[in-house]
Length: 159
Image (cartoon, rainbow, N blue to C red):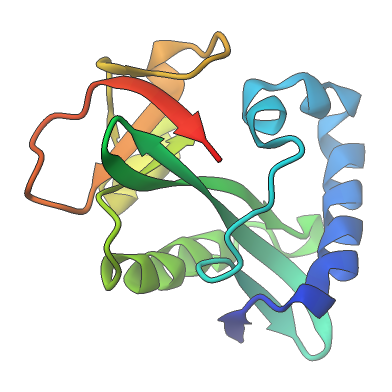
């Protein structure tokens, strides 16, 4: 079952992230996506969790960002308990959470990730945008939600 994240879920999500760290290794904290989000509050309004009974087995979070005057969200992290990987839980979380985002006044969603996975959700590589940290261009993926602006260009600022 997918539902909106609540503040009371933070501890359980943290534990899920800690398990993921054991899989990915301590280098996870050096990754640009983690460093960009560090010390920022995620936007709980768009964040979702996947539950099996009372246990949280998946989580997707969004952070506020902008490119010039365009409002956006940065997707991440998307986490699924290792025991449940390969069952489509991540896809369900992305799809369900983006439905809620599409209904709001958000121009784009951006992430740092693999095109092979996120391309299925309409994300495209975007060579005209950049982060304050060094991020490989092919990893910056953007999904346009607004037809107002056909091209986004400039620095992506998280807040």
